Image (cartoon, rainbow, N blue to C red):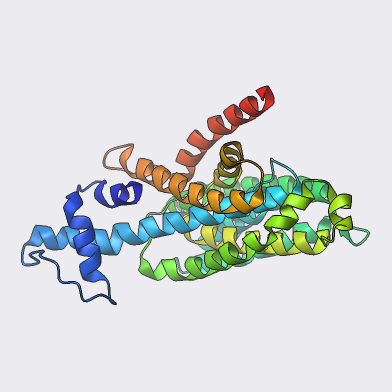
Length: 326
């Protein structure tokens, strides 16, 4: 229902009955013949709007929502810290750093800037991980604290770049700093789909290890969990998933922090359930946020990251208060 609503609502309203007819008629592997009259310019416009603009945007919202929520839940599990978030390991700020640098240098918006953002996010995460290693073991506390410092540096750099950039570049910087799904087409969906699919297949395999980590690091080691290897794999996958999301949609906050919290309140702490439920919750949350971003203010679009922060921030505070009362 929410997915269909994203295809119907917007600056141009579309008849709900037209949505699935247009999608099925456009599907390359189906021989479905719809009853749409494509000689009618209005029907042709609405069908193109659905299949070429709104559908890839809705699919991308689902992919990024799934990726951010999975990454957030996995990081919280591996660090045994409810405040662990993809942004805290530096991948979001690092990717934004690379994107803003690419904008200032005048790189191509379709390939150059996403590539710079993705590479910068991975390199920043690798640097933070390396700095957090002590005596051949990773320190979860050091990693999160170093990540906070890198986030502050990246935020200052983005602000400085906004002042130094040309007027024509400021809009692109705002896009990457606050997040948006505007301008997403089918060509942009394929790479995020592959990255998120890899994470969605691999991360649930570590659900048992996450459950054992809740007992404590030493206990998990005694029960056969290679904690350092687990952290390396989870951080790498989270960096890959979040990095590709930031590369194509900018920084979108609070999804990886709020959704796993809410899921644990609803279904309990078992990561065999938390991970798939978080993936579903992330997709629903980002679909709803993108719909609000497109329809909240008429004739303009609010940055998606602002919507997720406005909703996620108060929700996170309420979740903490509710958990403390319990």
